[in-house]
Length: 107
Image (cartoon, rainbow, N blue to C red):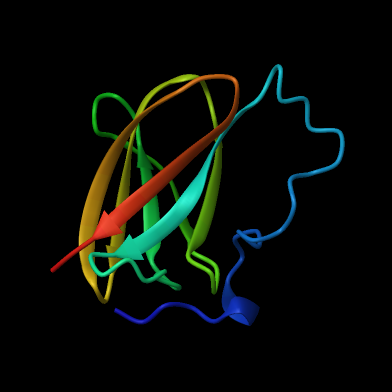
């Protein structure tokens, strides 16, 4: 699996600051870092956001620092990371504000 280059990727920069004026009292942000089993950040991983029934909702590619971010509704979600280091899932119950999550991938 080859990750798209930054120039060819239409997804927003996952390392960019949150938009000015974002009201964290009303918005739900799920953000974090994908790491290998050895603890190294994993750039270019595909991170999928799955709803509580396991249905695909969105996908982003991690930044050079392994970062990802989703704007979602409050509730139960699964993050699934797919990378050259392997795959990994993490469940998250997101509330309003910033919800920091780490996803570990392994072969």
